[in-house]
Image (cartoon, rainbow, N blue to C red):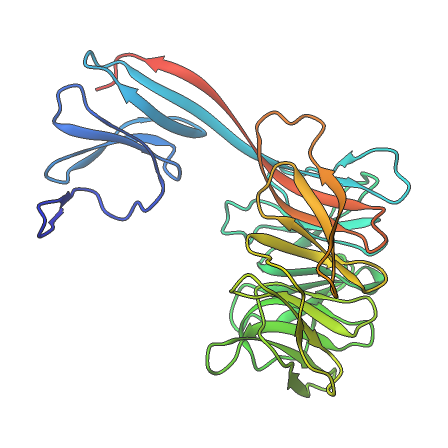
Amino acid sequence: MSRHANGRKVVSPGWSADVAGLAWSPDGREVWFSAGREAALSAVDLDGNRRTVARVPGGLRLLDVSRSGRVLAAHVIVDGGLRARGPGAPAEADLTWRGDPFLGDLSADGATAVFRSARSAGGRGPLFLRRTDGAAPVSLGEGFQPQPLRLVADGYVLAQRSEPPRELVLLSGGSGPPRSLPKPSLRDIVDAALLPDGRLVVAGLDAGSRPRIALVQPSGEERLLPGEGGEHLEVSPDACWVAALTAGGGLSLLPLDPGADARSVPGSFADEALIGWRADSRAVFVHRVDAVPARVEDVDIDSGARTLVRELMPADPAGVWRIHSVRVTPDERAYAYSFDRAFSRLYVVDGLR
């Protein structure tokens, strides 16, 4: 417990935004609270002594406590889903696996998706390949960072190991050992893409902790691209430009040609996700982060003009509160997305002490 100069007293530090419910105990001697990570109803007195009042499977959210001691609480169950519509498919297929998938990428032909499971494990759960026609998934193993996670030619997957030195590797769909890729000089790699000719495009921090994007040759020779990098990158189909969202809400185009200059796409891209390029390399796809339903738009890189491509939402929208990863093929015919869903039941609970 700590006391501040203004008279406030901290009785249980370190919870940040995890506390989802707060109420005084019936006798006024404790503060009862629920926190998402604990899935429990906890109590703390004014001296900082903490105890567990009740624990249940799933999530618990405290709503109120009456003077008589009755507790109003919601039991919350959160899971996720993954859906895709492959090329020529009449409808979406449910690709959900192990209850909590997060889409990493969709192949250019829309036939295969790569995703990770068990985001509760720090986002480093096992990786899977799955065809969008619903065929059984293929495990790629565990021990990889959430990003990058890219499908490349011939069924390979570009990923980054979680353990130091966190090298970039190519996974061969479970049929062989991972193959290491050249190590870039940038640190804290947040995204990468492999071009058909073997060149590697990497986003990370330079020696001055500035976000940059580098082009790495198969020989290991490296060149920093002009302009500011970002947390996500997309390479145009004609391999001329790398698109990246900047910290200020802009969209930069960085040239792969050493003789060209970086440029910006007109408009604001704050709170949006960059999810790919149109096949003609004249427009990029974006959607607003966490919007439900997800509106996928293409943005002309010269004028900034926007066109709605499609809206994405599961056929059963019950409980869907976030669509967090979307991929669209360059020809706009196939797509995939993952989402979060939450259900809750309201209870009045007696007898808690």
